[in-house]
Length: 91
Image (cartoon, rainbow, N blue to C red):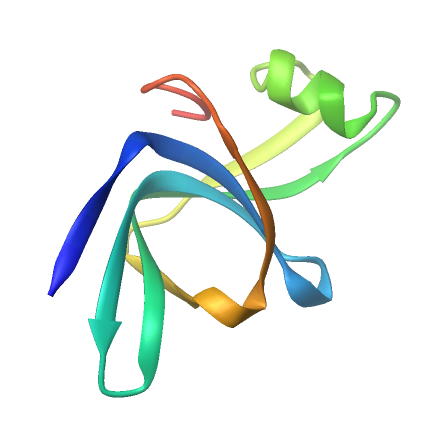
């Protein structure tokens, strides 16, 4: 069963330093609940601006965002936090 989450495009901070963004839905699978991110991007790195700067201006020259050609699934237990962003954030 999957459930589309209200305000579905989010930046998702995962343990061990991974940061993704995508259209999020919660999926209950055999390995437990996961967040499935479609239209996913990977926030690879940023310089000279804080995380808040990344959220406000992802197209800044200080931000390196890489588009992914696949769906990302993250175990819910690995999510540190997520931030709702606009529908085209990071694309």
